[in-house]
Length: 120
Image: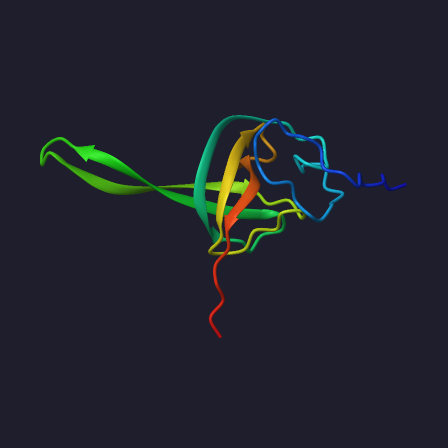
């Protein structure tokens, strides 16, 4: 017996836009039982091939003491991509830390900030 989805998204405690479409995913912070906490990052989706999973990457600067300059480095994390949000490759997203969802997933997408423009 399937559980009915809520028609209204719940408040997750962070000032983000609520998703328009509902989902029956248990690991959805808006319609499921997943609670968000901890760090928040903004990055770009670089992979979205796996089921309900995507890879988000963001740039950070690291100081190189020998040359007294900064070097660009990238951080990449595997992120849960709920069906209510459904981020695509190239989208700029806001992610937030949560309990471990799987061996490698400890973050969830909570908002799409901008979408990649399609060029035909």
